[in-house]
Image (cartoon, rainbow, N blue to C red; front, side, top):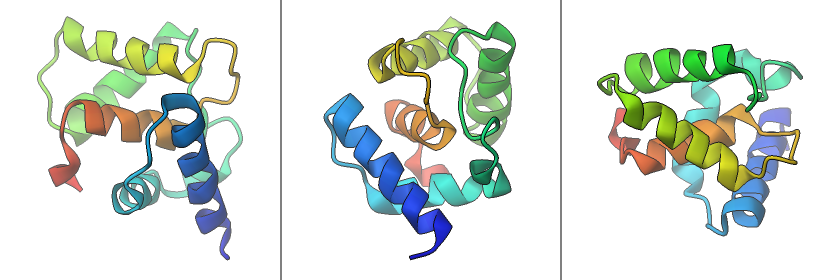
Length: 112
């Protein structure tokens, strides 16, 4: 199994454990591939829920540029909702899982 496949398995387990959902493996794979080499970088592969600058980056680079959503307070509310469900005590909020859950939340799987 490749390193990427191992990570995707880990992300799917996180989605099951933290969100109580069975991951759509096709979509999760596409979201993960879309993140490119950042998934192998310890810092870049995680989302810091307490860093406002990082949350803005998720909003601007992913929700607006990638998913094509219009800016508004609902975007930050969705990000914070996903991070809350992930668990504030959990330090390992994987970027691929956060992006996957946001993609599902806004019903934007068609982008992939």
